[in-house]
Length: 118
Length: 107
Image (cartoon, each protein chain N blue to C red):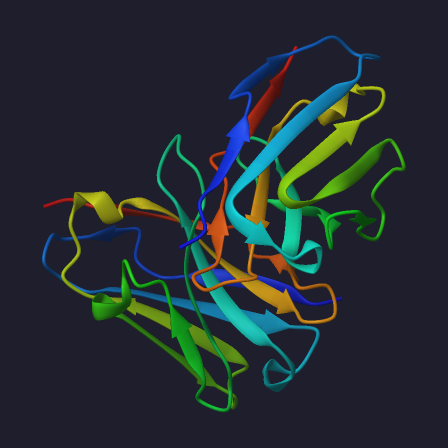
């Protein structure tokens, strides 16, 4: 059974870069498309984008100019960088596995809260 | 971008009652690309229904999905105490992938 675990700083200063890592266990990271999704406190879900070990990426246009994702196959991890953060980027950040056969996110990490504040 | 509008925002029901949740898309969505998730407080979303009407592994048969085009429905036939949660629809027939705003099912 695939499991995902997010890690990274819980507090980021405005204008700095938010950096998170998702560690994949139970399967090879080369097998699927890996996604980032966020949820501001008390609000709904927003898709950030996906990354694949081949280098393929796709980002939400609303965040595209600030987002970078990558895959480290040697560590079975993928990462998210979001630059020039503001208070509006405060959210729980989830990593999730896209199951192509289902056309859905079938495995989610537990999420990590990131607060943007000075 | 396809906007998904969920209604009602909040549904107040009792255990044993039937819940009907709506998800309306701003453009037609292929049924294959319409998904429902359940989220409980402090937890990540959980996959319920994929392909508009297929239950995910381990999901009880009191949950069912239906619909096509721009109108989709999630039905919970008889609410159990553990079903009180927020439900989101999601589409990826067209990029970017989008979620609806959610329906909270409360007691």
